[in-house]
Image 1 (spheres, rainbow, N blue to C red):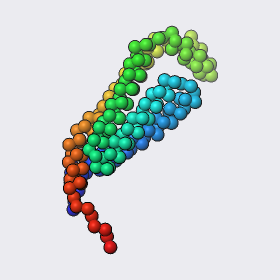
Image 2 (cartoon, rainbow, N blue to C red; image 1 turned 120 degrees about the vertical axis):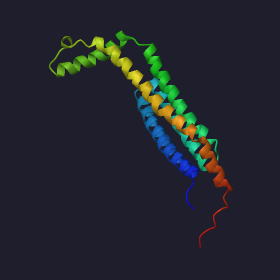
Image 3 (cartoon, helix red, strand yellow; image 1 turned 90 degrees about the horizontal axis):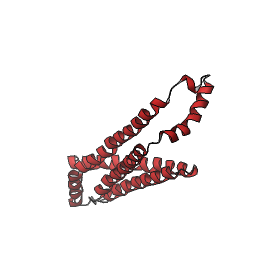
Image 4 (cartoon, one colour; image 1 turned 90 degrees about the vertical axis):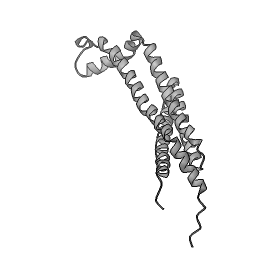
Amino acid sequence: MPESPDAKTLRHMLFISALDGWSMALFAGLCTVISLLFAEWIGTGIGAVITVAGVIELRGRMRLMRGDPSGMSGLIGAQLIILAIIVAYSLGNLFTYDEAALMAQIMPKIHDALARAGMSASDLNLQPMIKPVYFCLYLTVIGATLLFQGGLALYYHSRKTKVTAALLARQSLPPELPHA
């Protein structure tokens, strides 16, 4: 019997959620451990939240695999958690921009790199570029997060009806007989 369009949507949803959930949980988990080793507490907290979001997505996927349509809320919720934490972190950095602190942090590294290249900091006037690059970086992060996490949340939401129909159809099928 050919697979219904709703069943194909369910299969596709299970594949995407496995790939996304595992990649989030593993990558964010690794970043959390690295941040913890460097005593970088903000990175540790953000990494932990994103790791939990990956686990939420995987748990939602497991609920779908057991035939529970409420698993879609886990898939959608995980994307919204990631979107919220990354946008909040980026906006926090944009609103608390401190050029003096940033310059104090990066100038020693720039001086070292320029010295290795046989140049001095006076050869370049980097200060006017710092703020635009900083803002561009965080606005790009916000845009990419809205595109990917927001887009995936919308995609999951738009497939909710088809996934629910596939799960209901799966429950109404008679059990398969064992093969001899």
